Image (tube, rainbow, N blue to C red; front, side):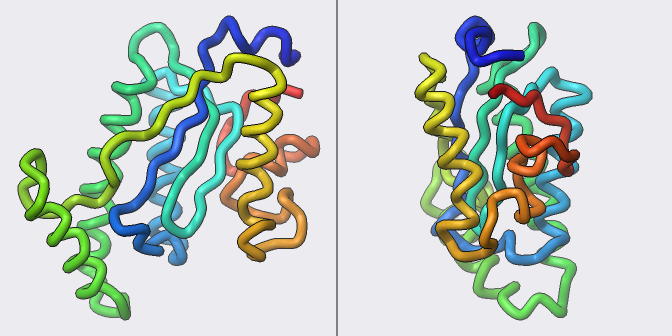
Length: 181
């Protein structure tokens, strides 16, 4: 697909952030829950991923939705499911050194949110920005892929495992990505 076709697909740059910017995605098991959930959304909910990166406390992606659901509906379901999975894993891991602190942060946020019963894992919203031009797409794509470099996690974007940067250099990453150049 070339960049001239991206506007017709209603692509969105989205960001999902963990409550209080808690760095929970420093552990592979929590990252894997997110990756597996994104893959499920691709296979069963029509999510199309053009670029993504999972950082220590947030997820950026460029996405679109199929015909059956909107991006908003997919994100809602994704956040609900990953919240349950991650909190269950966190609660049942006595070796997690920050378990009590993280649960306290999520519990405090939940107590101050009328829509939440116990824990509030993801911040509200996902900040969708419509990709309105090829230049805007390129800007967001570069931002996504360079995020781990700017945080000094890796020297080159394609070296970061939890990103689509490797797909954009011709290799295969963790998720199926629609490469637009």
